[in-house]
Image (cartoon, rainbow over all chains, first blue to last red; front, side, top):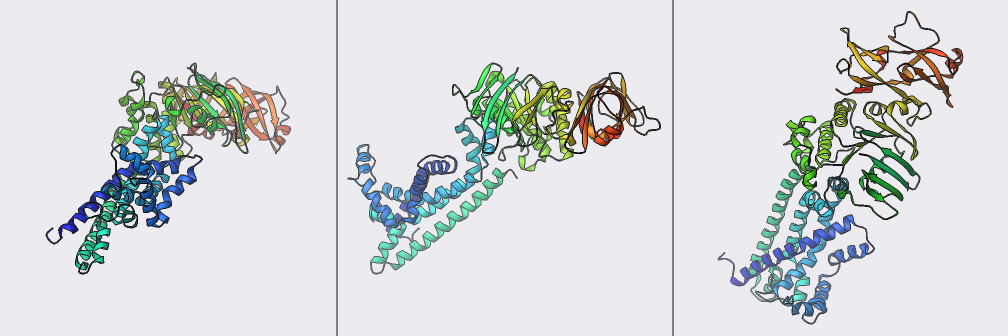
Amino acid sequence: MDWLGPEEWQAVALSLKVALWATLASLPFGILAAYALARWSFPGKPLLNGLVHLPLIMPPVVTGYLLLLAFGTRGWLGGALQEVGIVFAFRWTGAALAAAVMAFPLMVRAIRLSLDAVDPKLEQAAATLGASRIWVFVTVTLPLILPGVLAGAVLAFAKAMGEFGATITFVSNIPGQTQTVPSAIYAFLQVPGGETSALRLVAIAIVIAMAALLASEWISVRVARRVSGA
Amino acid sequence: MSLSVRLRHAFDAFSVDAAFEAPRGVTILFGRSGSGKSTIVNAVAGLLTPDHGRIELDGEILLNTETGLNPPPHRRRIGYIFQDARLFPHLTVRRNLLYGRWFAPRAARHEDMDRIVEMLGLGRLLGRRPGHLSGGERQRVAIGRALLAAPRLILADEPLASLDEPRKAEILPYFERLRDEISVPILYVSHSGSEVARLATTVVALEDGRVSRQGTAAEVLGDPMVMPLGVRNAGAVLEVTVAAHHPDGLSELDAAGIPLLLPRVPYPVSARIRIRIPAQDVILARERPVGLSALNVIPATVESIREGGGPGAIVSLSTGAGRVLARITKRSAEMLDLSEGGAVFAIVKTLSIAPEDIGGER
């Protein structure tokens, strides 16, 4: 990768790391939230639904600022987490958190759609055969929603790769620490002669997004074939 | 082995208030759709919690709304054969069959996979996925899956209702084998007189959520006062012995000394079988008719005549072979001057007995 300068390469590697962690770490929560919204009825359900979808409609800057208030070193959560050695403020972990929060609604929506397509009657049948709720989920529900989970994960990954507003507000734009590809493009465009670097990063962003999309198509077609039993 | 059910449950426009005991063998919950049959089996399975109720299986309480005892479905060990099979689409037939076995207590796994596969003819299907099976094949896999989960009771909710006639004829014999070869009691929901006639050890007739009659198939189907499906579908059941198979394609049956001729039945000589005689296909005559094409003429005594709101009447007949119901018009009853205790002859066309109305041990 000679044609990428060290600074650009750093941004690409960091973006991949941040997006990967953001996706993997939020996936269990995404499945849980989707399951709760699709299958359970509880008093705070509209509230949870709103909370999950809020980052999709709020200005990213607002999300980033709220994250800073909560998870900053003097934030009410950030302070407590710092005690146990977890720091988000101005670290790549903070960039991952911001990306995860911003990508969460997309992930939950994709998983929830596939959950709605699973007939609860199949889950009932599994229960009558002796499977407890957790086993029903692991052996019937999860395999059947796998295409949706993968689609949600890829969508979240792509969104996390491109996250800008909340990230830059929450953890700033520190090369090597929080400067992801979009932040780097922004930074290059602020200095004279930075256009070439910016354009190279733009090309890379397009390639990664395209590759993710194709991979997800390929995986979900294969999984869907397996799962549908045809 | 017995199941005792007592429950009350109110829906918006309809309520169920039923109590019955199911001894070993096949107990059929018999009634038209909306009579509360599915509510009852779902309560037994634990898929529905009734407003009030107590369900006991073999001395173990499965539900007691007074004490709040209501274990979840997976702790009940009750096999459920659904109308729509509900096979897991992502698993092969083999893994569908073995699904419940995994959760069953080791000591209870007495059903042998090979035996079930052989009994239900599943050998060639094991590697396939449900998407590639016909409706009848799916239902056979569903039966095997429920059996292999080592259940203490099997529930079958209209397992044949979504199949066409040839598939029904394919599956019904498997339930007969189940009844005769498996010791687990079966609670079977049906709105088909044929299924009741062929399968039932005990029948619980349901009308509008209430039990209107409980007894053997012959008792319930022969009761002119209990017609959960209406007079059009009434028909009594006779228990008969296969006497001989004739070369002209007919089988001779012995109904307690009275010979009956039917199209060839698929049972060996001396087998005990049940036949259902549709009430609409029975003709009555005051004198033994001569020069008649119908082959079966049964001497009978009129027990009762039940007139409905329409032009018809159901005549209940006592014969040497058992009770027979005949559906005739009120006008005919008047013309023949029928009265209780009067002697008549019941005439049944050989070909009016459909194959699905004939069943027994093979």
